[in-house]
Image 1: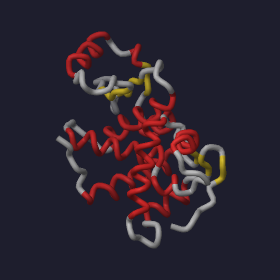
Image 2: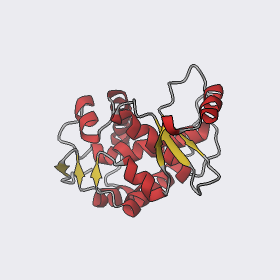
Image 3: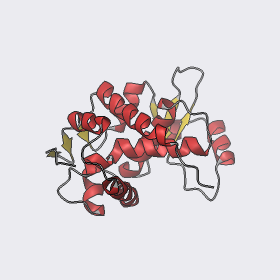
Image 4: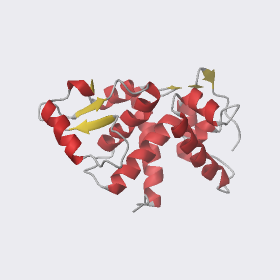
Length: 198
């Protein structure tokens, strides 16, 4: 069953991403997800550093029909903010989205559930390739978006689909949050951002 994010949560989550970028000093994409985790005070460790009991518990919880976990957030009584473990055998392009998704759970104070997964996906999507930032590219194709934002082709396809829905909205100007994001991000994929009209 697909769960929809309440409309009021979209702006809230986008605003959280912008404020997090400001706190972390993120001015360039592809997203430095390690700096993002550092700003949140969440240690980022390789999956191989997780305890065997934690890995066993995760395997038991994991749905075999779901894709393999490339990152996960775990609470640790010794650490105030928990830990994100990531699979360093996965490509950087996959870890960028997966680690940011897990950071989204922490930032959004999730306790679990389908809505939490949808919101964390939205958070990660906004952070790695927000539609307003895709709009600033010279070319908008799967390869160009994947390269500029340092994401995989499947993620780029989903981000372009979100971009196309964003473009279809009959809005003449950027929202206040989008304007703030455009002021924050100065470079994408090594190129200076030149702000285009909506």
